[in-house]
Image (tube, rainbow, N blue to C red):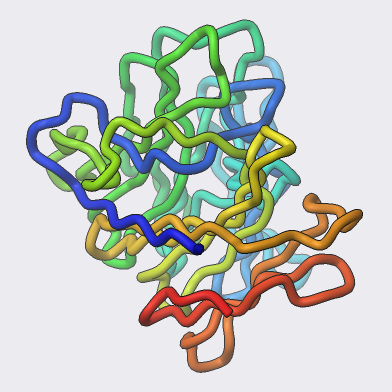
Length: 273
């Protein structure tokens, strides 16, 4: 039976989490991507060298804007296969992340906020602990961050909501109210988002061969989330080639293996068929 688990931002938990999903198996999160494309067709690239990072906004082969930052930053990846993230749904905010380290958890994580397309610096976020980028709410008020808290299990994480106006982590957690202590794990494989970015869907591959993949549905506008277990995955099909595809009206999410449809999810009821 497919489980649909509901999650919301609580007020009593110290660790914040969407206790679903994980990051790249050899490190605490997927790391950096080569680029990310905005809704207007502008591509953003970042390259770090010699203690500095150069960020460029490019459209139709022409550089629209360029900025140089102190430190090493890059476009955050949101899947283990390198899909770029960091942009708000309206394309007006770009978040850069530090490169991951694969020798345990860092003591501090930093992010740079840039307005787009001009790449003006809006500020820097510094947090104690190991954090990675997850998503941005449609109104650009909430930044979702993946936090890793176990040095002995780097693929286990929790997700924090960061208030971009108050410039602080939101107290509480995004957890399954019925299973608040369950620590789910998996590798992000594919992602799809609704047209205005209110919903962000991510396909996860669990690390155990005996467990089926699942889809994590984050309502980025309301700080709530659902985890939807898939009833099957085609034998022999490459999970890393899996894809998510939303219908034009946003009412159906199709989970695809390389050569077949694995499941169809009603985005209102979250029923799987």
